[in-house]
Image 1 (cartoon, rainbow, N blue to C red):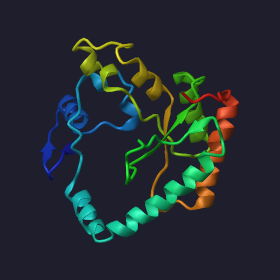
Image 2 (cartoon, rainbow, N blue to C red):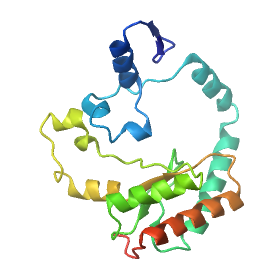
Image 3 (cartoon, rainbow, N blue to C red):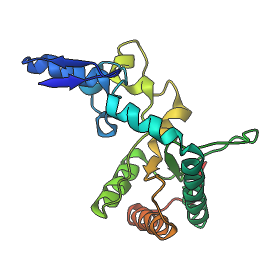
Image 4 (cartoon, one colour):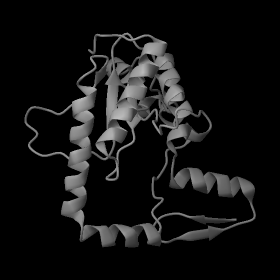
Length: 199
């Protein structure tokens, strides 16, 4: 088995346990963030390959165009998200003058629990919307739990994370697609039980 891990480095091994360990050290996929086994060790988050680096370098020449398109998608989301009181768009501090989202993470109303949020993400996946449970507090991962951190240590962080959903966000999203994504999410919220209060 070959494992690539940052800076074009590669490890070749026939040891399955070593291969699994190295892959977990290199990167952690979103669906693994709640795994007790996977989060037993902190990741290095170094999965960039030479190919990814080359693609990034080529995109630097189009950076202004890419950022402009992402701003347009952000505006589409804002328009459609603000029309429904059960979803709150990402927070922007009052003193921020320019911001470019890596992900578009929305928050549900305070009446939603973690299990309700998870059910909503499952509903979205049924409709082939690639939403994800994204915000998993670091102190609740096993590697940090072993250092003494416990559930309840950072109550606000935990409550915000329990209601966070990352929605698809890239330059190729058109307004009708964003409208579909948000409407589908609204339907999922209604199926679970909408909570009007946000914070």
